[in-house]
Amino acid sequence: MPATAELRCASCGTTVIVLPRILHGLVSEELEADFLGHTREIETEDGKRFTVADDSGAWTCPHCGHEASSA
Image (cartoon, rainbow, N blue to C red; front, side):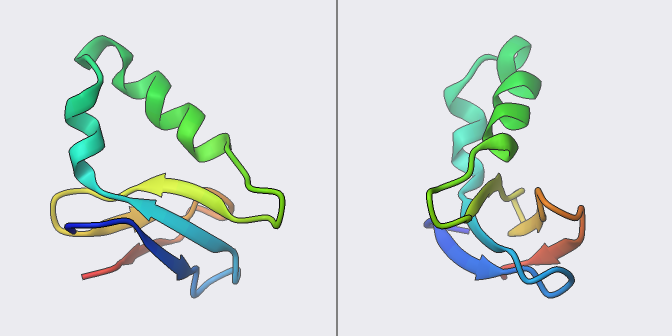
């Protein structure tokens, strides 16, 4: 997944901003779990949520936990 994508969760309809996997490499391994946890808690003023994709473009909805793919 080369770039950020704005997608809608097929399960709950939440608009999710899916960030690229490269973000994993920007934080140390010790902080990665905290970073990902905080990312899932962020919400924009209009209710959009954030998550980070894996290498294949798969992502998990931060609202309902549905697993999807942007690939």
